[in-house]
Length: 84
Image (cartoon, rainbow, N blue to C red; front, side):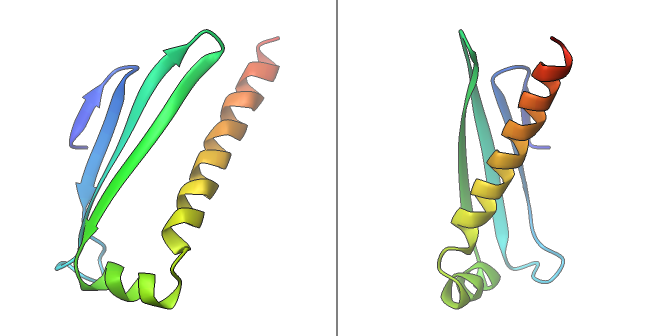
């Protein structure tokens, strides 16, 4: 993990096993709100693997983030329902 500030920020970086020449940095900025939290996610990627993946499927990264955020929202909703 690259950065960790409880309740406000989590960030990590690395490279896939398939391409050490390709790197990524991903951050989640978390803002508490009256109804829970707002999550902003940012990612940067450099290297040949990411370029090839984007050429094969231009929306692959968008879908991956959408799926990740939907899964996170489900966990949060399930946890909230259990605490009632």
